[in-house]
Each structure stands twice: as structure tokens, then as C-alpha cells.
Length: 601
Image (tube, rainbow, N blue to C red; front, side, top):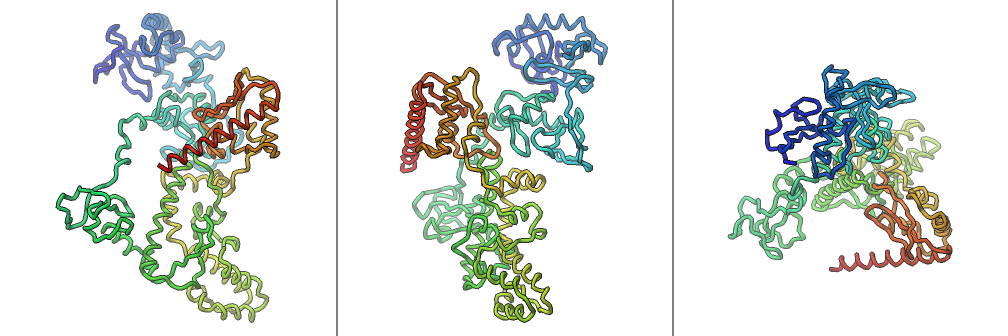
């Protein structure tokens, strides 16, 4: 098979459809065998009803032998296309008693469906598979989750719905382009990241998913620049005689990058930096930081610290403003730390997209701030971790008369004045507005800058947009801790391969129950790590699905590449448990020691 030369086959017609179009997304790759003077579209060849791939991939055309192709062309020459009325219709509808035949392009024109899996069946417009929705509660248009253009949420040939997400709709053309670019390893639901259910449904509905790596993974050195550090001195007057690109580690001519953007640098000596540990910002970032509204506010209002703040509290809370005011230098450092909130959001977004663990630590208030905005979120007392502020709120809420309420206001006068919540009390009902003002300030307004930084980071790869579009899907991922592993969860997680030993499977279920009951030194997490390398089940699930098989050997084997656990076939359960415990315990110990060895070096 000779590869196409640029422009060599553009004017050559496909022997099946007689079209010379070269459109890989529509008709598949166009190939010409110069030796036999044969040109075909990949899809025309693949979907022809009377031909099978009898050769190896490098033989003939895509493994289809030349003699078989000629026979199929001859067979098709006697069949008339029911669309264009011309001969050469090599594709027939597989529905019983349906006599329709057509060319591949004609089938696309009449909205036939071609299934690129199994027996590569094709269906005419009368018998094609459809997506059935029991009830349609969508009154308004929804965006295609790929191109974001609005579409009517009604399943048709050109509009498809995700099988795993109720609110995810797509253009057929958008899905096909994405499938070709992503390949079988990366093509998945754009909302929930599911691949198994999603791919199965898309194949049924005629989307071709090529068995290849993603196009962005095939480009040579595509991400090479990400591995390179910026090494150039950008200050106005570089004092290094060796030039701006000279970098000598552990000396005054070592290049320090801007801690904000990382895309500008300076020699330590050129910016009078005494050591690498000193912070440095380029002139652009320094101007943005000092001129920003947040920094101007930071010079007027303190941003106190606390030593008892949890992960969620770091995003929504800091400590009581009763603490001493910080110096301008300390305030500047706090402002620069907002970049860490941005990095936290970015890391979380990337982790979710690539199948990382579920966060599970967000409060409902924090999640609502992300989805609906802080201005539309009402915090509650549980969001306050500062003991003093919580006591003030409790006293305000439990006040029984105006005198008690005024007494509380007088005691906390300085604090309420500082946070802008001082108000005239005229009736007992004023306590509700006072408590609300304190809550909103303490939980939301006081930490607006770091929250916005975190929110910006969460926009990476479009994650925040998806969270705001489908909050019900993401709520459990962000706010609920994953349930503890149990014998039932692990038993359901692992699929059983065919022809497995019945007794060994019985031992496996008994072993899981024994581990759950604490009758073994091994834990459920140890078993999952041994088989998959993960200590918990990712929100997006495993790819491939974990499986077990039974083999005639003494000890279990965990294959983390394909998430397969091979169980030993033994005569007794006691022998089975001892061998499982021994293999899992020692394998994890050795892996831990090996990891420590690498870290130490």
C-alpha cells in the first residue's frame, strides 16, 4: 500500500461511491493503492456489506485484500442506490426484509446510521435506531456541550443526548469531530467523564470512535515547552557580562522567575536579591497587584489569620478581626498568597477532568457561592469556625428584648464598626438583619479576594462552567465524602471474567467479608491499591473497569495497567486467605520502601 502523496488522490474517485471528495471526518481517510490503481474511502470500504477483512493490517487496503475489494465492487455494480438511483450501492440495510441499498455518502444524506462496531451494521432511514426519552421536561433550548450553540432538546438524527447525563445534548457533527480527535482512550461524556456507557451509546447511534490515541498526544513534542524553565533576565538594566540568558545556579547570576506569572525573570544581582528564597515580581505583575481594587482595600482593612481553620474554611473563612492589624508588608504577602488559591482551584479542576479523587470537603455554602454567586448565597452559623464571632451571633439570635440587643451592640461596638455592620436598633426584629450582616461579612465579604482567585483557577478546562450548568451532578462530588469501601462495594466493582473457578470466587467473597469484619490485617483500601493503584474509587470511575480472573498459581497478582486482579486457585479457604494476605501486605510494603528510596535520592 503506497501512501498518498499531497494532492495525488484528490482527483481520483472512490471505487465504491464514485466521489473524489477527501473529507476524513465524513467519509474516512482516502487511500490510493498506486500499484493496483485503486482509491477508496475508509468508511465506504468498512461499511460495504459483502466484504470482510481477511488480511493483516498492512496487506491490501487496511487489511482488505485487493481481490476481495474487486469482487465487492463487482457485486455492488449490480445494485442500484435507492437515493441517487445509480449503480454501485455496496451498503444494505440490515433490518429483516428491507431491500434498500445505498452508497455511503447517499446514506449520510438520507440520515442512515452506520455502526462502526461489531458486524458494522447499517440501517436505512426507516429502520435506524433512535434515542427514546420517557418524558421531555425541557421547555427551553439547551446548549450543545461541545460547541455551546443552543439546540432544541429533542433527540433526532442530528441531535443526540448523553446516556449518562440528563442535561447533556450534542450535535452529531460535534460528537463525530470530537471522537476522531480524542480516539477511543479519551472520548467520553463532556459533563460526567463517563466513557463506557457513553461510548456504547454513541457507537449504537453511528458515531465512529477510532482505535487510536488522541490527536494531541500524537503530535511530536507537543508539550515540550511545558518542560522548559524560563531563563532570561528581563530587568531594564542587566548587569551580567555574560548576557541576559546566562544562568549560573547557586550564585548571584542565578535567574529567579516572577512568583506570580513565571514568564519573566531576573538575575539575583540585577534586582538586589540576597538569596533565592526572596520573593520577586516582574514590573507588570507588581503594577497589577498594587493598582488592583483588592490591594487598595487590603491597605485599609486587615486580613487576620487563625490557626484553627479547615480546608473549607480556608476558602470561605479567616479569623476574627479582633486580632492586631498586620503591617503593610504582611498584607502584601497575604495578597500574593491569593495566587495559591488560584493554583488550588486549577489543580482541583485538572484532577477532576483526569479522573482524580472526589474532593468531598466543600460546605454547602461554599458550593452555592461557586454555583450561584456569593451575592445569592446566605451563609449559616455552621460556616463560622471562629469561636468569638460564633458567640456574638448566638447572643444576637437569642436576644429576647431591645435592651439586651442594644447591650450586645454596645459591647461589640468596635468590632461592628470595623466590619461595617453597626446599625441603629429600634425593634427586636432588627436582630435578624444584624446577624445576617455579620454572617455575610465574616463568611463571604471578608475573603472575597481569595475566593475569586480560587474561582478563577476552577475555570481551568471549563470545569467551573460545567459546575454552574449542572450543580446537581457535582454537588455530591464536592460536598459528600466518598463512602467507605465495603465488601459489597468491592464485590460489585470487580467484574468476573469468563470461565472463572467457582470455588475461588466463593473464597474471594468470603475473603472480602473477613476483611470488612476485621479478621485480617489487610484493609479494603489495600486490596484496591493492590489491584488498581488507587485507594478510593474515582468519581469518573475506572478505565478500564476492574476485573478478576482465577488462575492456577500460589499467590494473587495485581495488574494496575488494566485493573485486573488474578486470584489463586487453592484447595482450602484458609490457604486462600493466607496467600492473599501475604501477597498484598508484602507487595504494598515493598512499593512503599521503593517509593521512599526514590524520594530519598
